[in-house]
View (cartoon, rainbow, N blue to C red):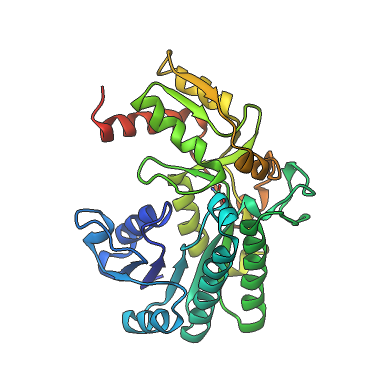
Length: 318
Ligand code: SER
């Protein structure tokens, strides 16, 4: 990777991926793109940036060509809960954008990354220690998009030789950018509200286990996978990844180590709960570990400490 174009650069992952890639490969070698303009003082704005709607194929091709990219990291997509509210738009954006990015990769010989998700699983998938290769019959538009995306990436690799690489991300937890419209968002909001208010009302019910991962581990995983020897990748589209399997009471207990008075209550959102109920409790990440050395560093306690300290700094509390 020398000249990288990143779509969805102002999204939850893109915001931090841009910064990391610029540190590693040089600011001028990473073109951030998004449908929105960045804030002038944001980190993303401190290097090359271009407005790009990923459904605009001509503009995407022109942008790739002018920048002289050799890699595309396609991050622009709607998350699960909002995709469920706007399924047709989700199809247009998630699938239309992906096809344009894959076509750009084919036309300009780019290495390619896009994330899949635990949303690619459904209620008929084994819920515990979910295997790398298993039943994938999701019941959400987001899940349908992710399964189709995995298959398309595999197709472009086999049919056209495009170097497509992908992972199934769990819920990603970060203090830099709050997510928008995901089922796993409670696990981010809970930390912000713990610092801001000392209490949180969860829209996901107690006892609902889902896989999660701290953002630093997610970004490191992307870089590691993209740098890995392609010859060693057996399951490239897409690798199961997780840092921990948690449910809200576990997060509460971890927060109470630092905020003993923290209170967690529940106001379950039936829409998001019904999505969560179809996702695995915990997935098996052994293929990612064996094939390219996936090695997450954050467990729940380390992540909790890091999240609380960073949010306190950000909010100017304590
Ligand atoms: N965090 C995502 C979501 O909840 C999972 O891919 O939609």
